[in-house]
Image (tube, rainbow, N blue to C red; front, top):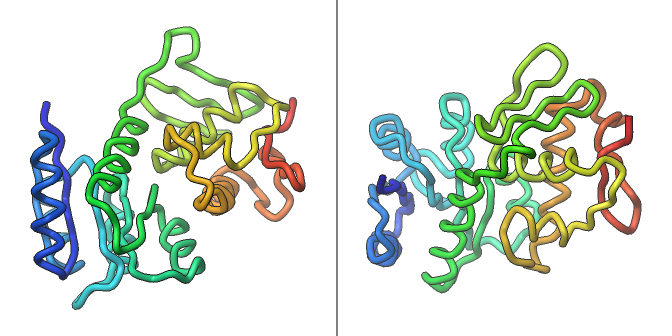
Length: 228
């Protein structure tokens, strides 16, 4: 089945360029030029992934993510002209899966889109379908995660990081190791984004995120899931 990509940016020439490259790769593309319009298109089209600009009129990318995440958990790749890392971290904290800084090469954006979609639909061997450690249960096939007595919603990146950590409790993963898992390639310039994903995971998993029980920091190295 053809996957649908929603491209949202107020620069119409950029939208047209991105659309042409995605169409060439076989995706179906729908477009919007501000956050308010994008919410309506997302509700109607239910895209498989959203390419989202941050700075837009009427409703910016942050406002769109806040509203959209309350309704759906669609993977999001951010487009940002900002160089301030704090702005990118805010986007990741709101649930974005990846980002790319303008100006960018269209082929790199297509590669990022393909990687995020691959993570979201990845299947694994039957023996690894269900991971249970302590009171956390992760089901790869259904992509469901249960913590204690309830289910939680994770982005594709958060899900894949948790799956890696759960698969080998006690093993330390560096930030680059985790980037390799969620993106399929090591982007050294983006390794600090793992810290944001871990922060988001702790907020969803831990009873007290400031004193984590499950995901431990190994200072100067990376992260590990605590042994039972």
